[in-house]
Image 1: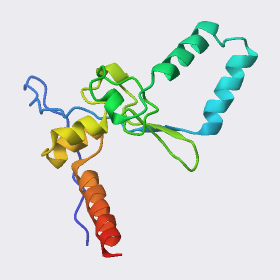
Image 2 (image 1 turned 135 degrees about the vertical axis):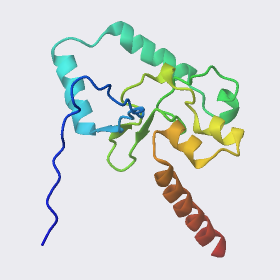
Image 3 (image 1 turned 180 degrees about the horizontal axis):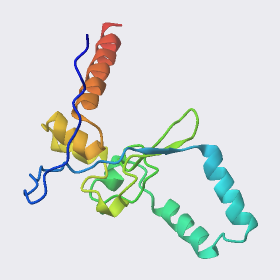
Length: 158
């Protein structure tokens, strides 16, 4: 026979509640499909919401975009070039074009680290620190590390 299920009972009135430390909640990353982004852009264009100032700003940003690591190593931080493959704020899937926001609850200027190359230059950090920087768990970082080392071993054996 199975054990009877215990029921949860409320704290008796008058007794102080035992406050437990609440861990900081981390929001999961959010992926936006290319179709969803294209639909939003079409909607903005049809409604006349495309701002000429915005288009001029985008052209200016593209002209100032660093092309090599040497161009950006001493650049301003946080790095605002989110389309760079080394930027930690978002990831673009090369097969589908979908975008994954790694920090959906933060703006780019709120991040302590925005460039994976800057983090790599620091060197010698723990899995937990890497997980915090990339908004992933320690275990997931360990799995990625193991997979990457296996790929390196395969490449060097050939």
